[in-house]
Amino acid sequence: MDKALADLIKISNITGKDSTLVQGGGGNTSVKTDDGQYMYIKASGTALKDMNVKLGWRRLRLDAVLSVIEDKELAKLDAGKREPVVVDRLLLACDDNVKIAARPSVESHLHAFLERCVIHLHPLAVAAYVNAKNGRAHIEKIFKKEKLPPLWVPYTDPGFMLAKRISKLIQQYQKQHGAKPAVMFLEKHGLFVTASTPDAALRLVRKVIKLCKSKLKPIKPRTTKAPAKADITAAKEAIGKAVFDATGQSLPVTYSSKNKSVAAFMARKDAAKLLATPALNPDELVYANGSAMWLKTCDVKAITRKLKSLVRRGQKPAVAFVIKGLGLFVSAPESTTPLIVDMTTSSLVIRMYAAQFGGVLALNRRQQDFINNWESEAFRKKLVSKKK
Image 1 (tube, rainbow, N blue to C red):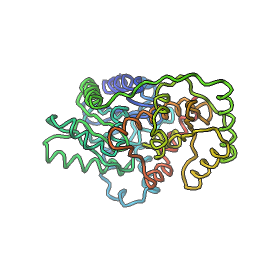
Image 2 (image 1 turned 90 degrees about the horizontal axis):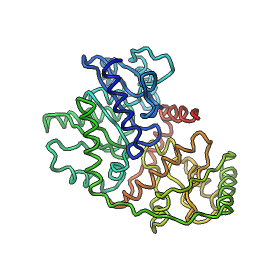
Image 3 (image 1 turned 135 degrees about the horizontal axis):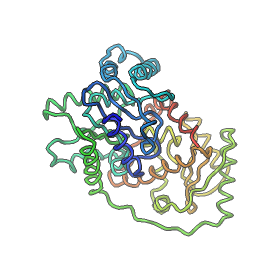
Image 4 (image 1 turned 60 degrees about the vertical axis):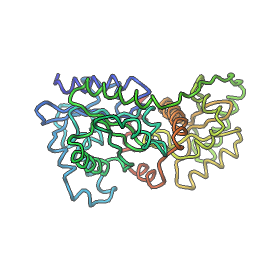
């Protein structure tokens, strides 16, 4: 096995097994070969923890990937025409013996100009800042003693434009500091760390998480009395009927029990306010249709009205519901329910943390529209939906 591939599997499996670092199939990793000709990178729709020598990765020619970023004509195209071209060119850059249909990460061109080992994660401790209104100021304060400070990347539509913007920001950073940044915080997105070796990259991840956690006030754990089975059944029926009345879809409704994060969230006086904002990041919008719906009661007409209001405003109907005193319910196919529970629970934790730093900073309407219309995200969701 190529050393670069072995290193990729190592950093992917180690980080992917920690649910506080990445949720569902999110996150990306890459490792370049020592000769600088190739880059192994995670395949789109693959969970980091599931990567192995046979699946979950692609090998690309670095020169072909870098040519995508350097193509000035691509930048002139609108997103609808540009992004499919980018996907095709990344596929053409693949040079391996992978037989199954697997796309290289849509962020391949971003990884290409970074250090040898790249780890991109969505840690809860980092999301507390990148999804908070005053998050940047607090990050700069936390890392002010670092010789090479982290690079903060203002929110940019993922894909080609994000890679172009980071490329420009890194050039500016190099002029100022004489080196590329080892740590990048992407607003409303997550964390990038880059290093020359897998062990150095993993140490950097641990260091960043430790520093971010150092200024977080722990969320007070809560335990609630188990709801009566009759109340859970009634809530499921109410949500199921409301979803059908609002969308025409007949979907199973699942109750997520014994969830301490949900219990802690329900105990907050500002719970409704924290869930009043849209999706925190692209993954929450793609996999969970956005933020969960906060409900004080299980009134079918009220839930139906709220769902129809979301659709009328051009948003996706909620698939997760937090009912005060009961807990988290999900209305979705069984294949995607565990992922939605994971995404929603993480979102509740992030929102509670963000309240410590000025409030929640979520995707605005334009940003949501881009994600909803981006073929690459639809492709990722399709892959997840197929898995049992």
